[in-house]
Length: 163
Image 1: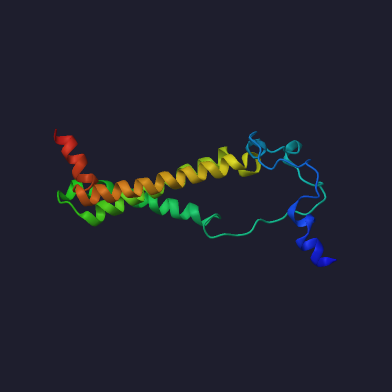
Image 2: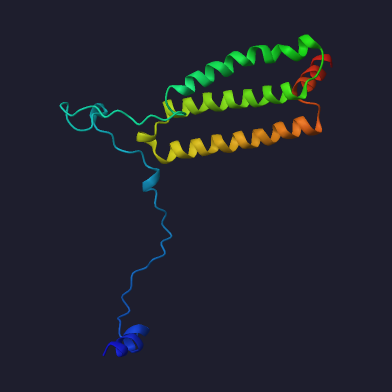
């Protein structure tokens, strides 16, 4: 009996009716693109529930403020160094370009976190973060091309300043 069901009419689909469910739909599903509903005042649960402390992450917690302060402070002397010394230093030039890129990436990421919060926008927050990462990688490739084929950013600025 078991072998008959495995090999017989039931396995070939001959015993079924022609009422089948269509698996391919040409109508797109936009449900993941919609904004998420928020409770009033963004209060989840009751007032008497204990506050849940978020998990600590070295990158996402207060350490990133320290990184940004150090980076911002380091950008000031690196900006004037090649022009004051009058000599091109490729390592300083590359470090300056990468520091500007990282500083910009952190600043725009903070704007995305503040103004496109994941709890409200979901998909759009993730998409904005992915586009920011893509733009940063393309910029790194541009820095690589500028440093290898040209003489660097400071040389480009000095050529533009003279002409």
